[in-house]
Image (tube, rainbow, N blue to C red; front, side, top):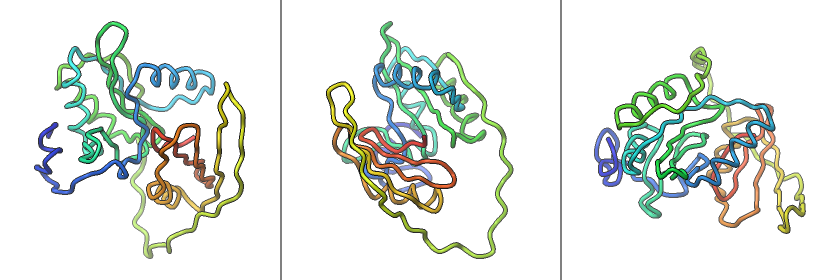
Length: 212
């Protein structure tokens, strides 16, 4: 589909997207990429991912935009993701561009689609980790009533000369947490919204939404 199709709403969907539709965590700088890999190694939480290298930034962007969950926000001109994933592209010290899709919620189908799209747009595989194939969920007889997110407390911590603000909430499930975070964008640094659920903690900061 690519840049122009998603910018002007052509293709299978005519919906336009805005920055508030972003459900993922944008990775658009080498600093953010290095921070992610350091945190990954420290936590030993090895999420599935696809990572390819490109000679041109436009190829990296087109490769991401060909994925169904990646779009171009019409109000900011930035890539957004409609799934709770880490995504984006950035320039390396060697003048190349790395594109990544990553996260616990990365399905096997999207993993395979990302590999195919990245290769199709002249990308070279740097590394990847295959997610486990999950059985399709059984259809539910009755839809559950929407859950409710409840505020618990606010924590403040001093780190590296900055005041980190953590707004802690509780929610009944992942779907409720994601819906709440989607409606509550974060626009300032060092501010975090955290929803604790039985399915894990879902969070939002200025970069986007992610799962701890």
